[in-house]
Length: 65
Image (cartoon, rainbow, N blue to C red; front, side):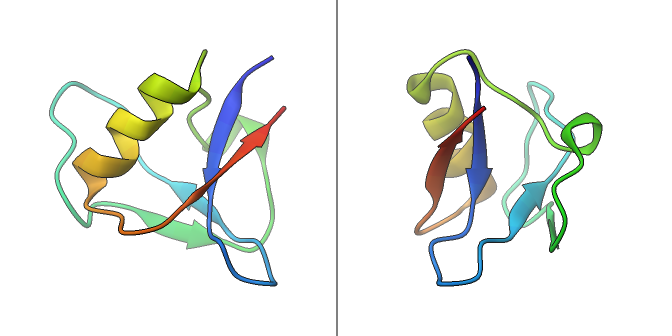
């Protein structure tokens, strides 16, 4: 299983970004459609949380795939 970052509203949107060691705040786009090959997936919640905080996200949800 892996975890993908998504928005917290009633309509779930997906955070698309390039996952590298140099993630910068705000460098993401939102997608209404989940395309697994276009969004980073993480092994655990801790690594997903690190990415979310590096992007500067205030809120997010983990979606387990």
